[in-house]
Length: 131
Image (cartoon, rainbow, N blue to C red; front, side, top):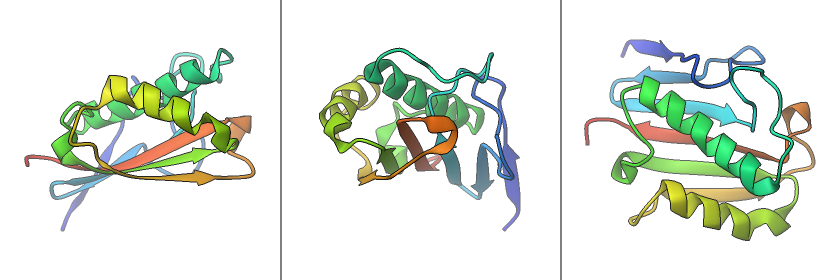
């Protein structure tokens, strides 16, 4: 199955040896996003809520570049959340409610020791198009 590399200037450029997303057939694998602002490549230094919102906005931009959308939850089949402080988990739920409606995608939340560039949150996703 041929694969297509997905890239958009509306989300931060990759900071390593990876692509923003890769599409194989109708499945799109979105790489992890941290709260970087695409225009400056600087971390959002505001509240944790603003950081979570930025991460979800970045994922939405990459999903859009692939021809999908986070608002089409039926097509987003998996979301992984990585937090350096799991006490922020309720805030993740609160902000996610602004980006998703029921039925919610499958999700995992994992506490980690550290994330790239000192970020406090990272998320990646798997998106199925055309469902």
